[in-house]
Length: 188
Image 1 (cartoon, rainbow, N blue to C red):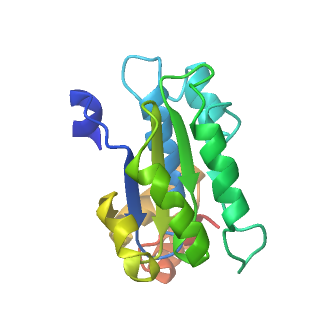
Image 2 (image 1 turned 45 degrees about the vertical axis):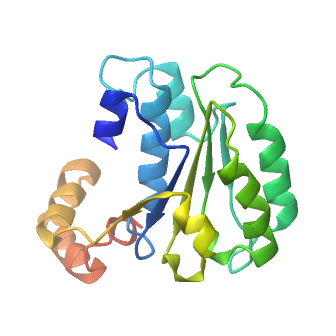
């Protein structure tokens, strides 16, 4: 992703896969911030664009997810997203859409997204997240740049909990071991 940003060679769609609570959505938000960052070293986390994207409040960021836990992304949600992506960005370089847990989307919703993946808007980037690509249509997978995330080293999780979240050393060590390298689970 850093190489794509440096070279200005962004794909129109990415597929982030990996176990739950591994950081797929966090990475998607950070990538969206980097795409639209106005600072010197994207994502700077300090410019207006970065702050708004990291809070999911940017007008050029759309997040689509199931309306209820255990639910499915519906075709109406995909159609609404397509209308939004067809518009030029309001204030950023790219309109970014994050489709969370897209492996839980209904087959008709996946079909509806295919047109957007085949004929993307010039300034739109889609980021799909999924636990696994197995439940996605092969045509969806073939039109996305796959990025498979793996659990972090236990020591890395422990250090993150201590340094970023001020967890005590023994608590951080226990949580890191219980998390199995899934930073989101450890933080929760």
